[in-house]
Image (tube, rainbow, N blue to C red):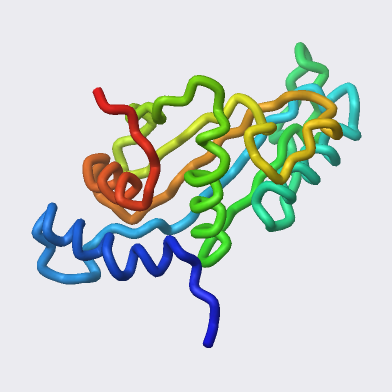
Length: 183
């Protein structure tokens, strides 16, 4: 007997049926699904202090449960003292079971810890069924020890779905538990 994440089982049992009824899909393969979650963090101050990249990689690895990689600059920018190939950010791409586990922890443990939280904005869709969410503080995650944080940083979370429209993607993410604001 193998382990199946709670949200993955819920998607197969409940979400597929709900989305099929809402959008009257003829085939189960038409139902949109979550393909990947990309968590990225820009560390612009790493130009001056190289250790900030290592701290960011360590934090993102703790948060997501998967090793983060550093992203390099693509070109020189003289006004920022930036050279091509310098590390300026970190990212993690989550797929499969780790993706569902991260989403579950985000919805149940992390987002409720945001100060004055009353839902996430529904205007982060890109027109192709993907959703972008910005988080201002990494200390909302229970995996981060607040005493060991060097600097409060934010991060961007991108939910990539197979949905064709933003309406379908919003329904999918809402069914998976993302708490959208009621307008």
